[in-house]
Image (tube, rainbow, N blue to C red; front, top):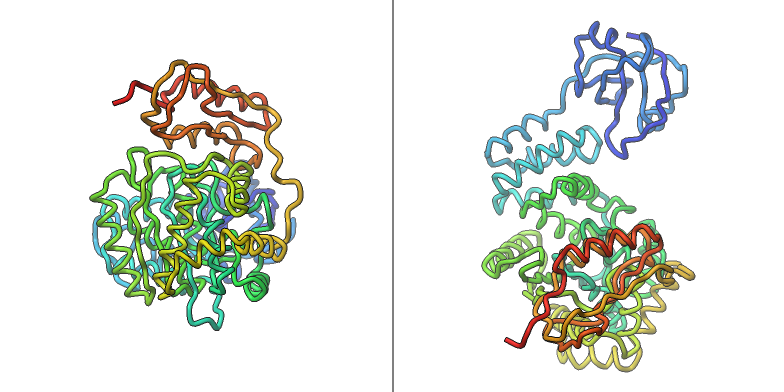
Length: 485
């Protein structure tokens, strides 16, 4: 069938999509989510009366891929569904998938052959039935093999990752310059925040450009031994980024996909020694010590099969770390620690993690070397080098002009700080999209507070968002203060 192109001026950010008129679709016996082929490109169809008979509405991705223009005539033919859909159905039924089947699913994800709905079925199947150890290894390898990679001629490349869920846990931005200042390579790629107030990339972006090409990353690493960049721009583990996008609205985080997601990004930068930080706490992402220990075993086993040496440390996740929660506020904490100031809990955890990472790589007297780097100012100088090499961001550490401090209604001891609520309030205030938004936390667990003492300050770049954040705080028990137990 020949149809005239109509630019619908819409974008999916992924799958190739076209819209057909009902009558034209009926002639070809096509239904919503069926496929058509234009030239050699397989395209998902939607059906709508808004498209006239004889027209085909094309999304921006299709127009760009096929170099098509408005009113140009194209020939369309029905196309079969991707084979991987059958494998996704098998996973939904609880069947184990082979290496070949998982590889086919990932290939179709990377090539934009699957819709978000179809991808959600795969995520749901993994969530309901889980992934075996073998399936997780297959998934990790498939993500890496179908994505771009960065390979440097280095015998040892270090990396670290925190499972997340703890506001202000910005240890990476302290560990990286320490390790790099000691002559070790660390290519740190991070995702942007999914549910937290800020991710490493969101915070680093207040200081430097994080959207670098692979070529630029290699240049930065050769100059400084390290980089801290957003993984999404480089198409490293690109299938993983699409899976994360699906998980977000579903609030699903299948364990197998989570492990594959983390390790595929490490493998994509050729990491040889990886430290995994799993915070455990009542309002952390991992709440149970039993689950954390099982997760530790899986990371180590899968890492070994992938040729990586992995150490997993279980840390306290019962409260935020540092004072700042939100991109600019967290960046201030990081720079303070690197200059010998800043929150002690963030400093001490960063020292411990940097030491463990170096010990994993066989470095002797690791703790002494870490302390020397931090106290001599070498780590801070290295951070400035990395920022300069990545491209410095000017005036990004400005805090939101609207703010409100919350004080204690009674005297007592801080018994609990809810990580999830703290993150939610910071996000409602505008973080991480608005860099100056977030929370400055004045207290931590076990601190004594007096009635009227400032507990925290909420910052926002928008007056209404500040009001929404304050309302949520008032309606929730974010900080529990009581008598000494």
